[in-house]
Image (cartoon, rainbow, N blue to C red; front, side, top):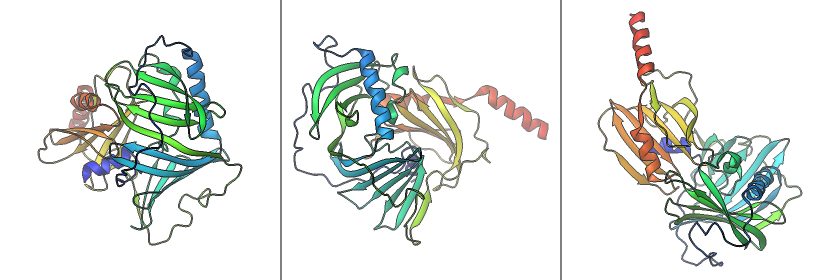
Length: 362
């Protein structure tokens, strides 16, 4: 339960498991089915032109009004979702509604999201960009800074949801990150497909529009207030609790050193675990595209180190050190979370300073 609570912080509002669908998808996969193709394939678009196409896609996915349906596949999990996206007064407003499995709705208003389960009478609140619509361009905002860690490969023309698009691969240069296939519309530079590939180039997730429509104007009930129209009997949970300036327990002085090449700590904050009641440090590790979280939390008792995969697609590694639980998780390869867990260590400088201040206080 504690691990699940931490997972909620890192992956807000991940959809619950849907029942497997036995029907085959209507479209055959493109050839080749792996991530990479020869770099000298004829008619290949230049790297700068591909970057420009991705930049245009990021802008379009954030600023255009559009709607439609898309399918998300990972393992035997298949989710069918309806999406409505708008930008109102410079703020992104988005609605996702599940069309299979348990009834659920995901709302986005600016940087906040709310996940509603009407039948359970529950709502979870958290911060974006963790759900990213599965087909959001936000994760590719730093494409100009990723040359040392990824290379772009043009895979030629394709077609998604009846729209012609350009298919390209974002290929990692090592085993610490996943690869991607993107299909960006020719007429409108929307992200029509995003597939994720493991460190061996094997497909592990597909996200693809099945229908896209341009929306001139549509009213969403919550575009002024995220919980507008929500009945009073809904149980509300804030994922991760409120941030705190300093934890009331002595578990500070931890760092990740070294980090995997190309990664850096983008943020570090203290939050409360709603399950254990303890406070924990949350560090976000990213290379500009791949993102993982490292949690440091005081825990009593021993726990075996573990690596596992969960339905939302997270890879998790954890270990206990001096009654402190270190957990790393993310939609990244096993090697990445294991590296982060093994290299989360006490900062000797910070520890010495803390001990000095403690002696002064005595």
